[in-house]
Image (cartoon, rainbow, N blue to C red; front, top):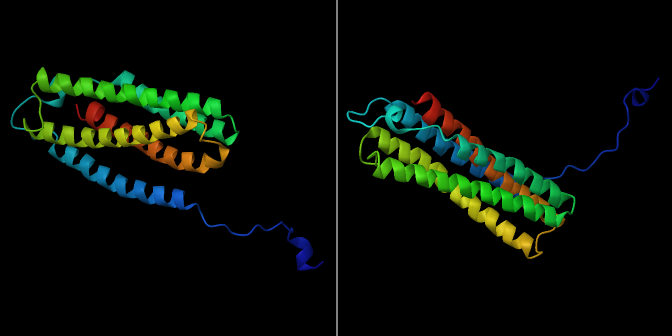
Length: 198
């Protein structure tokens, strides 16, 4: 029996370069992950080293509802991408709108938490090391949520105007990578700041 008969013959596809958008987003995510790691390490390093109060245990409450909203938005964005891939543009618009709404609820909740911390509990970025590291880390994440919501709102606007179709699926997938990253970072921040850091 010849060697060619033993090895199954498969149709060979030409190797295709990965999408520039995916590669670019992957590089951005790696760089942003490094920045977040630095902020998380700084938070952990200075945890418990404040000479004056308030401490995390005194003022922080677990943001359950807003966290559920933000983490659920990854699912709704995934459903939006899947809908666009199938050509269901109206369904894509609906899932994008729900994603933006969930992200907006998270931001409003964060704003309300900060208002309470600053004006009721007296915790500012200058109060102590906890205040400095807390607002730096949570604020950095909040900034990323704002950027993501802006981009998702643009995608929603294009979708509502009929300018988003299944030929744009890859672009929405690239945007979804960023949003999934923001959500994954929130899991780390939630655990470090609100669970283990208290």
